[in-house]
Amino acid sequence: MANSSAHKQVIVVGGGLAGLSAALKCAEKGCHVKLVSVTAVKRSHSVCAQGGINAAINTMGEDDSPIIHAYDTIKGGDFLGNQPPILEMCLAAPSIIFMMDRFGCPFNRTPEGNLDFRRFGGTLYHRTAFCGASTGQQLLYALDEQVRRHEVKGAVEKYEGWEFMRLVLDDQGVTRGVVVMNLFNLKLEVLKADAVVIATGGCGQIFKKSTNSTFCTGAANGRLYMQGMHYANGEFIQIHPTAIPGPDKLRLMSESLRGEGGRIWVYGDASKTITDPSGKEIPCGRTGEPWYFLEEMYPSFGNLVPRDIGAREILRVCALGLGVEGKDQVYLDVSHLSERDLRKLEAVLDIYNKFTGDDPRKVPMQIFPAVHYTMGGGWVDWPAIDDADRWDRFRHMTNIPGCFNAGESDYQYHGANRLGANSLLSCIFGGLVTGLEVPRYLKSLPSDSKDMSSTIYDRALQVEEEFKRDLLLRDGGENIFKLSDELSDLLVQNVTVVRDNASLRRTLEGIKEIRERYGHISLADHTQFANQTYIFANQFRSMLELALVITKGALLRDEFRGAHYKPEFPKRDDENWLKTTIAAYDASSDEPVITYEEVDCRHLDPVQRDYSTAKRVKHELKNVPDNIPLPF
Image: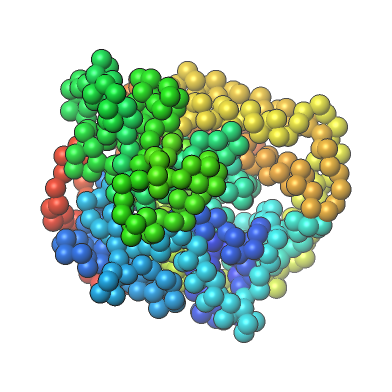
């Protein structure tokens, strides 16, 4: 007999926007939530999302609509995103903005008091609501306050400073809890649960030189993958066009800078030519004068082309030797903006000033593309509204029963490229949907975690204890941080924007070699208190497995789509590659097992992805269901 979801135990791993949204909704539905986070919730990586959150509210008189937003998202993802979840997300977006406004999120407003909106890449419409240049932080704080109301009532418990290590699965492979580690004393514990939500963000630290915080290792997803979770579209990594180059880390310069009128340029050289989107060779500006190359090649979108296109064009210009002082960097200039516009960007401008010493209000910034966002992630189910069997399936649940995945750590909503300002939206929407689906799943369970034999928990804990002992006792000649640097060098050089099969094969073999050497590391620190060397060494095992997923997926996909460009295969190939990559772990094999799944294109047939010319038109989608419910 199915059980009520009231007072069932739910574990949410991750304290960012997706995790908080899921925790909030689960608590509202009567669940008891344990919220596990490697850091204080208010320091989760969502605070780093600066520029805004998309919603087609159409207060700017542009005849925008959620349908056009969905069209831009589907096209922007190069038709690799399943369309039903994208459509529902875009339809829900205005209500999410109004909800966050009611929660007290301090959105910028027009002089009349209405919500203000800016443009972001890949669209001609002003549909990005924002809080200056700290939107992610303000959204996160507002959601955290809502979760704290339930925390005071005892419905939510926070485990800040704890890391997810593995799922506890019963003999039928159903999720019954997690093993977690206290990051201060390295103590391992079991938390029992009837469902687990993973919302641990992306895997940028696999590349190391990225815009991601140090929390974004991908280790949680990697551990789940090694336990049987399918990983989808791993080969698609978003490269952000504008970051501060640095030897240690690449610091994001938000798309809000261009949304408010910032311009990208280099000094021209008329003796050199470049191929424009029409295939015509054009001179690289006038010698010695600023050349606004994105504005010339993409006059309709200019500096707000989609991120994959912007990054690729910057790389092409720098490859011609036109980068600032001959280096791999170009100018991003906001010095011409008004004081009013500059005030909206203060948070980002201060970051640049602090890390470079230059005042971007007076001199152009020097920027270059950087690894930024993870398109791939845990495969999750999505029965559409009109799917006949949808009541027997659960949205955002992985192929492991009872294990859900949401936010940047899942693969939905973006396809091969993400529209700027869709990330915050997808995290909140995905979290809310998950928070509704978890109680529905709980009602289908015939038994509770408290009824499970202690054997399954002891077994899971023993696996982690044995690995911990093994790792601390290793006494080889390899240094874990040197291995991480070598992995980063391989991936950044060969698995970012421009990829070729010969280099990808070498990278795949290089990762296998690093994995073999990982078995011969020794740790400089063997203490049991806040041992960062041990914590990272433990994470690195599963990070290597995700690196193999990313690289093998890229090697097999012989086409050009989104942020995946192979010069040997310069065209998008819908006939052979309009499909999702699914990676499965096989302990008996030294590589991921790759299969494919068709993309759900029920609302929009693939069209040419052209941003060189465009105009605002009323886009239509087909087969749109009536009365799509909102996740509230």
